[in-house]
Image (cartoon, rainbow, N blue to C red; front, side, top):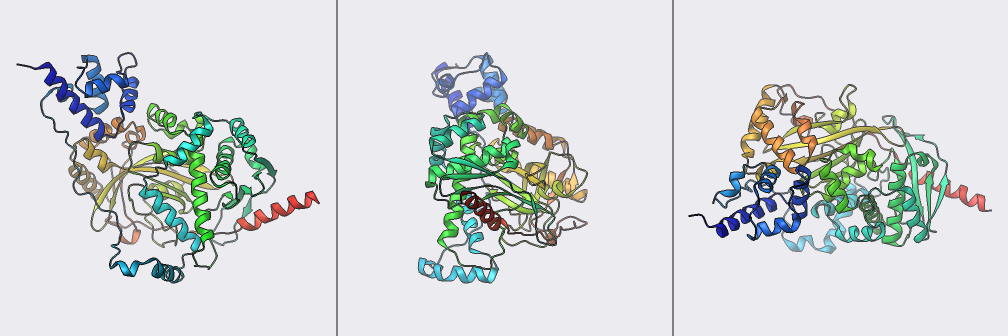
Length: 517
């Protein structure tokens, strides 16, 4: 004989388990339900009562919830409490054991690191950025203290206008000084890029902005918000890098391998100020709801008047799904920004360039091929000597402020998502890899694989995963020299570096001083 109290308890437990296995809050689930049926969708409090066994959902509500998780309604009504979530075979992050401990003492590391950098050709500035990125990835790009400060200033407005930021500038005693600076050519034979100094912070509460940004509100808002973050977080001490297009914070021609405290502070101030700008312009709660509503399509950048770079970086910080990666690159494939919350190998060295990157990574292929659909989504099987991985990414190619082609790519690891749904990730990976290998590295997906990835796309509310199914999946490798295809792929030429930022900044400040005389 059925027991209504027991049935409601069992259903509630199953609902709570599957909700948590998908990393959804009660509010997230309520929002997902309202997108399917606004009239019948359960409220946060009602879902909580269902999970606690105090209510049995109506047929309409149960149908909506089942739709969210792509389950049959009967799944919630049977007495099997197990939510099949596979967590085996997690590949550990590559690190080294710090043993014996006495060899990793602070004093010995202080002596050894400068010599190590000198031998590898890595500058102190580059090493500082590597430390910051490692810290960022370890924390899954979650920095709630900065989020809180940004929310207090913005009032969680979405979208924020330039006029809103100007009011905050006035509140914090910041003034804007406009300057005129044309694009300059790089002075390296391999480099065809142009470089534009966009803005920089002066320690006298002045923010210098290139007049080229007056007609570019997307980038203007980001630059202004970043310098505002520097003022609020660091008192406007001026210890932060200028913002440029056509250059990046990793490149440096300096041969100084010493790790100076100035390098580390500069890198840290740059990161915190940039993260603050993202949090100010894309408040966590409002932006997360907006992403879910629009299935994470980056085309919403036009509705919010924000750049794709800002939106993509912000996705990695607000999504309930933690296994993201993000790359920015100039031609032919010089990485200028990196985030790897899923531990994906670097497709290119951003400290020292490698000679044999794999050109089948979307970040390189879309950037360098003439005839490709832009933007584009791609399913990739990353093959190494030991393991294989399954990724999806969305890449878009646009021109930066200096007129250079630049590629922005946002991706995620699909294996944890498949495990979360109790799907056989090993079979799905093997089928995809086998079909690609039979076709020399590229193949359309089998119906079984497509159904599984469509389910993941629906549950995560990431529409471009489903879009990627229209294109062949591709085999990619960490390096083209270790290519796993029957016919090895051809590599890309070396990248280029340039370093004229500081001289441009000094010239502008000298001109400003001359006006005051």
